[in-house]
Length: 191
Image (cartoon, rainbow, N blue to C red):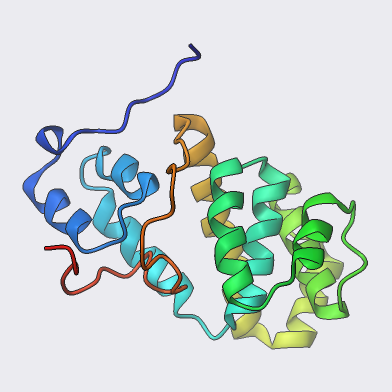
């Protein structure tokens, strides 16, 4: 069996992390982050900020799927394919995002988002040409939000892949809302 970091048990977690885990969907990514001690709350806060940006869910999920492709992050890809479909990304578009090099069959905006995700994921620094294009298209503030989104999901994919977090056998119920994953719920419905 290849090496991996096991998911922490409740007994291994700080009480505040156990409490936070009760407020988010029961996803392995959150449990693994909780095992870092003091990482869960900031991870959820940054994720919440990224997900509450002015980017619409469809564009956001296209970017995340392309990051998952560029970084080879299977967990991230599987989770966000579900979310992408809920945001209106078609199976044909999901396939193009996962196979084309570079993505060129989507609309102009989606192709640009995929280019940004590719360049940042593979080269770290966005090219001057791509940066100019996203600034022209979205303005400086929203362009920075696109960059933050791609940066955040690059961090997530690298964490998931390096710790070898496994996909849940079945998606948790209620895991359809785009913003719910990174924003703690007030109370879980199962108690």
